[in-house]
Amino acid sequence: MDLIPILRSVELFDGLTPEELGAVSRLCQERSFRAGEVITAQGEPGQELFIVCEGFVEVVLSRAQNDPTPRAMVNLGRGQIFGEMALVDYGPRSATVRAVTDGTVVQALRRQEFNRLCETNHHLGFIVMRNMASDLSFKVRHHHLAGR
Amino acid sequence: MAEVYKVSYVVRGEDHPGAIANVEARPNVGDHIDLGGRGFTVLEVFELIPPRGDFHFLHVTLRPDLEA
Image 1 (spheres, each protein chain N blue to C red):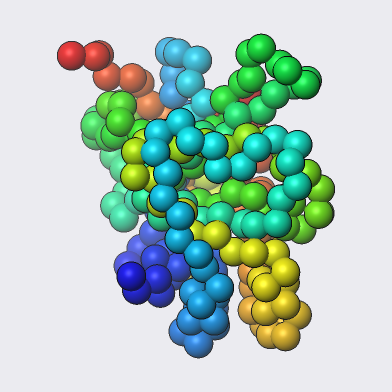
Image 2: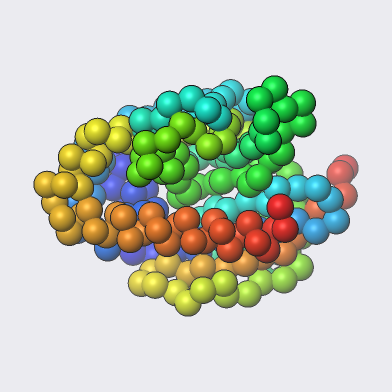
């Protein structure tokens, strides 16, 4: 699969050169999920950032351990990223993320390799971190509008 | 590159978490859309923040379609 057109339509990579997009694509690992399958689990260590390429994922938050009624916070579709918090703050996963639809496809970027790329190419590193902040800001705006 | 519309969807009338997704065409009021296998009607569309390059950032309010 040619990942470049897909990555170009992801805000996280807006502003990268074709060569930089190529470098990112070489780090991507594709994974497919069925509806209901867990991709990341709240509280577990996280070492990857994910990009939704097909389908939808659901972000679910438990307020306490063994919470009987975890709350769905948002669904993320094509072009959206998740797992970025653990990538930048090295903390545990802040929420559980599971596939909503059969055939949900994501690309995974490992923290160590991705950070190394950002450190060796400062233009790429600046663009990606700026866009990641912008994406987090967009999610906060959505959260406020959704009233959840 | 073609324009990309990054959309914040909020659903009115039921307890739904809403969604964020990229689409290739700007949604319009009255459009019927599919989110994760469910149908919705677009009630409202506005620009959430100014566009940057080829990216547009929209907020869309939805109403669930009646189940068949």
